[in-house]
Length: 345
Image (cartoon, rainbow, N blue to C red; front, side, top):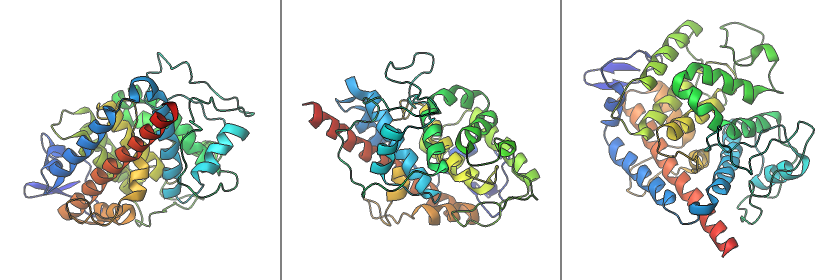
């Protein structure tokens, strides 16, 4: 991020260093951002008050995580229907450990079990069969990227403590979980090189990332922001983390999934969504062109490009997109709660 006057801006090579005592608060002060963050927070709070969560929060977390995994993989270019993914996990099995994303790993939920690498069924309580599907008929087998995304979403709860202490180490662990079975072992969790045999992946078509040296410096700046105090809402912090990781692409492959998972970790660790109940990445897929107040909101790809290539307006467009996506994600999970409530009535 770079600074012009009193407002932060983002340019094609923004600096990741700390520019002021609370630079994230500067982002929150951009036009319309605070109001959008308040709307997103209100939507999450409405979700958290739902009566179903008194007894079935673990099921909602699991369902939200499944939908997040499917949506995040789709944003990376790896499509599968929700029914197809659910059917594969419940029938063919996966090596994803089924640890609820919002649970404390020190006191795991009894329903959270690990499926052996050779297969096995997902416990019925984790993937509620009673939920109605809004998806198309099941597609073929999920790709290794889809399964890696499921694996990563399942372990977010275990990663939360490491994220709070050492974000860069957590990012490396996330890449290992995600890329296993897809990337060569010697590339897992390691920063990308500027020259190599593997072409850098750019599913959002954001253009070439910064040089690896600059990327490392900016990651240091980003992690510095994460451990520093701020008055900015968690929605804003998550948006900045998400946008910076999309711009930097620190691993050269699967960086979008890492960025989205890191944003979800921010919402978990900062207490906005402590049990990971919101289907965050579904919101990124569903953001329309105009929000409820009539303010233009860009879709995911255009908003990401605005953050990477724009100035203060680009930052604003991106944060407004992320806030709207969270609002829609909360509504998605609220629908899950309603479906569960009807099934158990």
